[in-house]
Image (cartoon, rainbow, N blue to C red; front, top):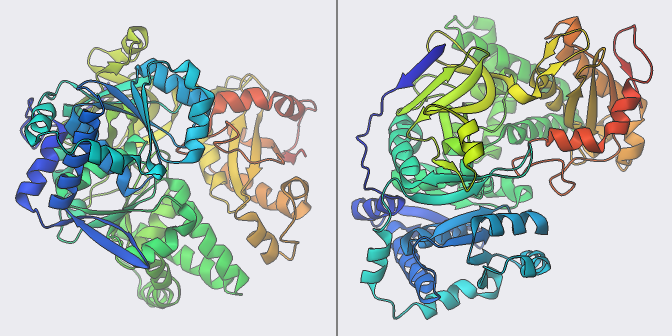
Length: 608
């Protein structure tokens, strides 16, 4: 059994809770701009001291409204400044937040509120209110509902004006490190969501150690980031709290369609994103160049960028000719992409899915070091991450300080340490099943290099075993196909079948530009595009490229392009854009059956 464990570099404090991180920040740098909020065409800073004042004022409101220490409070909202304000106000009031994805269905909202035993719920908009109204009778424990767009947070502040400071100080000091800080429900990609009990120590100890491990990213003067991933997810929640501890200025942009203008005005020094965002940035730039008649230049620049970065990572000398080409492309292509991201981005932290070496090397040559990491809700987000001082593209880095990672005999990744959650809420059977002693069994498969850098190779439950007995990891095929600009999502199938096939959806956002660049009607429907010869040929080329990396027995022999997109609203994607494989397999059983209706004896044969 291969194991790598990194000792903590910050002494543990079992009595500390998350509120201590903000108190320490205010004491150290009260006038530091900890947040910036949209203000006209620009941004208005909010200092650490001002944020602390607002947190206490809202915490008093919760106390006056009857929220008691230990009470569970649901929260449905987009990624804005108010999200973190509410988060810390609940911590200071002694309550336990139950974050709910703002895209959740009424049934999902009902499950999170009833299973957690929430006594109140904060919502952002009338739309959330309508969804909550649908299941109001099913959540009798919820006695209070506050709607942010109706000014209810301001009303709470007014209501709590008479609550003494000493009461909030008492409440915020009740919890110690071992107590529950938040109850986060898994996204439910493999069944009904389970509530993960994350403690104050999970956050405090992981954040204090991560801040030192990533000091070049978060502890440098002027460090700033723009959050656009949902803060209901542990990935962005962890970063938002880490930013407060480290003194990083944080802005928010919940509308990803406004992301580029926001990046241009906010000018962050680092980003937090999932691989799909980096794919979109790359694909959009490529298609824009194609539309302007500069597609050949862009592709040459991209090829040079990947080649240049690969040589640097391998410690090889850059040939003089490549240096000249690189300098030219830097002026023509790379500099423009850097400017589009605000001009100051030096690092980007990527998680939730494999990024792929091509994108990693491309952005590295732009001057953006993507620090790919790995973790789950159950590990308070990161368990491993590449470091600014040493990173290896294609891996998810070494274990963070205070964390141990090992592989069992079949390659399953197991984690223990300061970041591992306490238990599944009211589910001792699932908790026991998920642990081997104090090691949490992630369900993911991986491998280590000699220095302890982890590479994710697949998910244990997703391994396909063909009728011929060949084990196939879907991710190895799906990830490179998904990188194609017109591919939205892809699911590889073939369990107990004679060969591997794939279900493919098109990217409705990227498709019109691609169609226009290929002299096809930009307004072509997804249904028509699914059977269009040029579109099918483009998908086939993506599949051929993926097949080139695997054996013939693992290669995709047939595919079908679906006429609809998979979305969170359709029930086929989680909020972090992961596919719900089990649901897709059920909903598209007829399409899968059709793929195997006619035997295949030649190479890839498309099926419409």
